[in-house]
Image 1: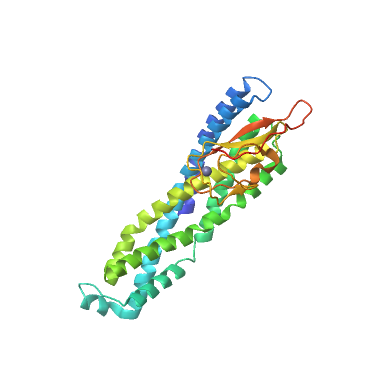
Image 2: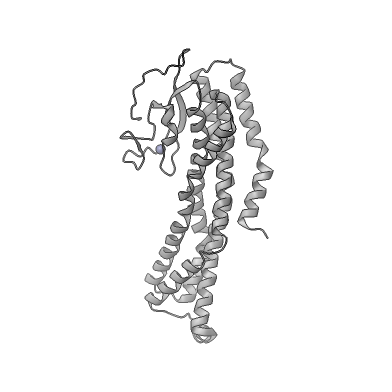
Length: 311
Ligand SMILES: [Zn+2]
């Protein structure tokens, strides 16, 4: 059966090699320029890697999330239709060819029941599958960034990447709540417009793809940034040469939060000690990149750099 999980898995396997080959071409080009870490060149290469793995993560996450959400909305519709037939029988349908107008509270109750009863089944499995892709992208971004930042690739650090990546599950879990809200909104607008039960059902079915696409795009982009960030942040924190990291280039800086580091918005923040870099969180649709802004001297000492808010 072509479940979202299977699809995701086969997409992943067939697409696996290419981004890594590109990443290592970037790394090799960087390494050919000399052994010591030169900040500007390191950052050019790091930025390319972040672009590359984000694009890879979007591709890996968007399609399975979209299919999972669309499948969920359609199964809600089926459940609602089943309950309707069980309660009103075939007679109600045939006797009201123009459609059966239910009281709003009955309509809401039918849909709430559908939303809840359709939650069971493959949803956890799908979340876990997406999680494994998230981990995989984090690990690949880590390995490539580690080459540039001279970070040792040890099994203990690889497991650290995996556990950091796993701590990001809540956003994926939240897709069900936002999808349910989108269905509720569609039902409410149908009620307001005085639509029959049948027309409401038809409307939600038609909107299933749209609902799934809207959420999956935002989720995929956000997850892509998070997955890539985990890998690059761990590589930076564990690097013997990186002392400070800045965030550059977010086009949608959220000054009012919700994410801060020592009272400053994390978007485009400058000179965060590398030891803290993987505690930085960002808003959905964040477009900034990690860049090296401080390196240790030949004695391994960190420079003193001022933490500042970005622009
Ligand atoms: Zn941002």
